[in-house]
Length: 333
Image (cartoon, rainbow, N blue to C red; front, side, top):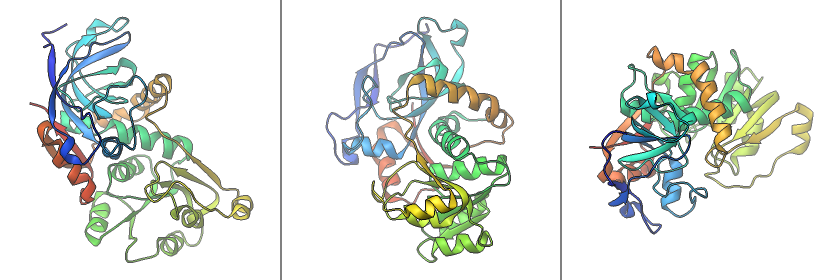
């Protein structure tokens, strides 16, 4: 174990509220348990669930650290029982259930990936949450394969930009929706095959035009509500609809006979509450299948802006304004 202090700075609000509750406080440095690593955090990703947790709408799972932060990157400074001591001093990025907004954080060793030289710490911190989410939902639940056309909402969000990146690497035709002409241009610049400004055009009509009436193989949806029946109109026969968030509502009315007639599949998932065993399997699959692209410099997150830890409130304001393109991160030190 390297020299680790007893206390650290963390963002750990005791009450829900606006961004102003995100102020640095002193907390005890966590101790790694069996199978865990203690990491001196260099950077942490900011994600929509962090905003919801701050608002009191998405409490951390039982036993998870209370500071927000579902992903981070840094240097391993201590290991728990059962972890190879050779991991001390290595650079890792991790997917966690909480705790990233801090100078030190623990992570299950099996949910950590090595940070290759091709990635900065800030870039590495911005990868795990969106990478695990898009991989498990678009490629595993929606079974997207080379040559498929997919529709992804929120095209310039962290999820959307990761879907574009992975789609390009794995041979998908990616259609995204965005909320402005500026974001439409950004999505096309980042590699989307088609970008639809949903405020100017009906995305259902445009998808049918783009696909020659065939429809998409899959839709990755973070909107929910009244988007769901419209998404189903975008699907081709045997199409798959995957829900990963419900920003416009958690209920939808769907045409059952259409689902039956065209053999559509409606599925979805949340990642944070899944058990460590599942996340370890995903990490292993990503390290084998996707991580070689990161090592080669071909997989990088789209970066929006970095804020010092003390300015976490400004990072959340940036996310809530909705003007960001790609990932927002917090940096330490």
